Length: 196
Image 1: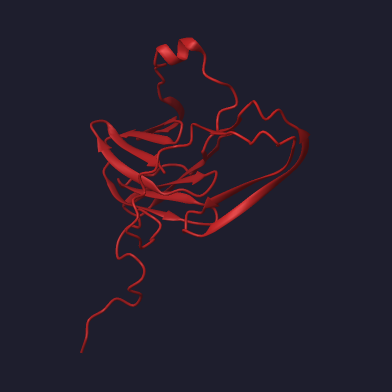
Image 2 (image 1 turned 120 degrees about the vertical axis):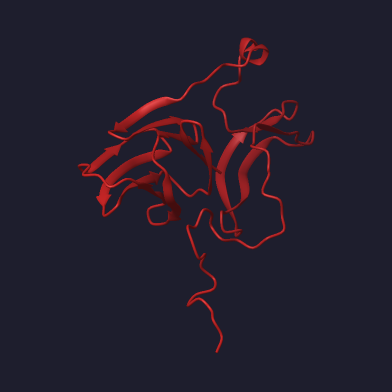
């Protein structure tokens, strides 16, 4: 007789990441700005193709069809910011702080970019990622009678927070605006969830 789980390809407890087997480092720096210089005979830009890697490792590409005249003396920039940083921003680091987006009796939820901070004294029993829609499920250890809460947020990667009661714990479901992995870290006043 052999002891085994029914499905050995699914994590045994609390999925914290999308399972991808790879020895390739995932520490890739974010795109700030890339420059492309065209040869002196270039006169018209016809198409731009971007090849990208999905969360599951598959490779795809997208095209933008253009028909514009160009000056080959000037470089073409690829960037994820709409405006160039000012000289002041280059000299000084702008201090950003977390913004409170909602609160319940036992927890407060703050966001800053792709980081969610939950300020609470309650212990997390389990946390895992689900898809369709992409969401983080977090169960907190507290037997309580909280009312169900649903809050939606525009222009936030954390697009919706739902809270509901269960026997012996309450569940927080944080819906995301797209496909992400995440890392959770315990801090002195609660927990931090950082999307990747």
